[in-house]
Length: 488
Image (cartoon, rainbow, N blue to C red; front, side, top):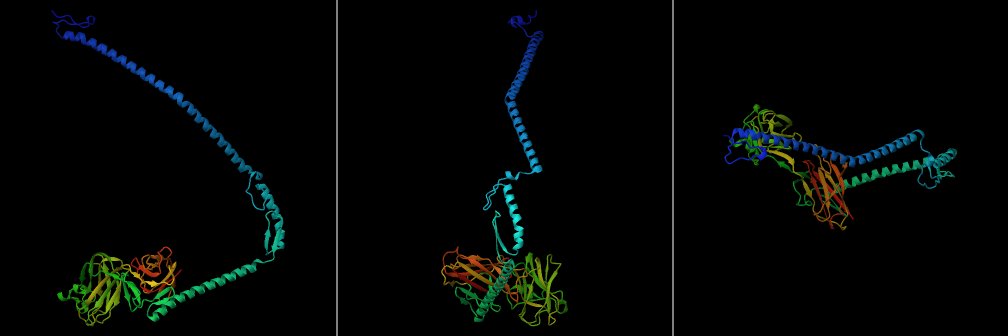
């Protein structure tokens, strides 16, 4: 006999001998299912109600808090619109009818009693009515009048003579200025000429003139400079490129005269071409492969000591690939043993390969011999510092320096204060002040003179005067004379 099924009436109680069977599960589980569904329905209904209540509460809060502010903003905007409309009306009225002059207040003016635009216009109108007749009767005269229109005074002085006198004085002043400039320029040149004739520096009262006939007044602190005693000038020193890269040639006669002999610094040795006679022309060459594009300023060839082993002419050439060559210049050669030939290639640009190619046979119909070959690059900046000169004036406040550049100058112009910078010191060369240079003269031979003044007041006190010239930007600027003066 099966056990009775649990019911809700007795709390689903079971006996000790109760056995779980499919009948029991089928009787109990549906009851639990029905109750769980009822509970879920109840909870869902409560959540929806709570959500709706919360939304309603939030809407009420927003309505109470924001609506008054929105209303206030709308009222403010409405007020602005009213003011804008009023302004537009007033502007339209001004455009159509103008402004009443009596309502425009003016600032006080000496001699004028009017305080508004209307009264001022009336006063000017009264003055205008009086002026034409007076002006007609007193033409070409200085006229004085008061702003209130009460009266006029005339001075019987014609304008024309005054203008003529002013013009005459102006012409005289211009002429005097030109004469002063000419005299100053002549004085500077004469000072250099006198110093050069004396063969040494010329001392002046608080000043010196040095024509650079020697190096006695140039300090050892100078750098990268070379004194040319023949031309009486200081020149820059080019960078020697002859040890860079590898030597190249169109063929060597033998090991004892190989291409390296042209770069060994020994004028007693020489390179000899493998070509002889007519094949020298257009085939024999000597040069260098620099390994990378290189700017060359000058190519210098020194003839071997044997006379007539030089060619009659040759061309400086460059190449970027070692196969295609461009001739930059062709020139005749001296046949004298030991003479030098200089090729100026400063404007050719940067190239890897450089050479000099024979464009003729040698003078004796044999090989072409070259004792030394030199490649010079862009010059290093030249710094020229003078010796110390004693000043009679203690602690000079200003100095004038004039520097003379000798031709031939660089193919590109020397720009003062950029390519040539001059400065002066009053404390023995410790502190320098730059002089702003300007070109003041060009002589018939192309020599240029630059002049500038240096303010020395910012330097320590002293009476030991020194000048300094510095060249820059690889510009050829040989300096052939300097004038320095100073005063308190």
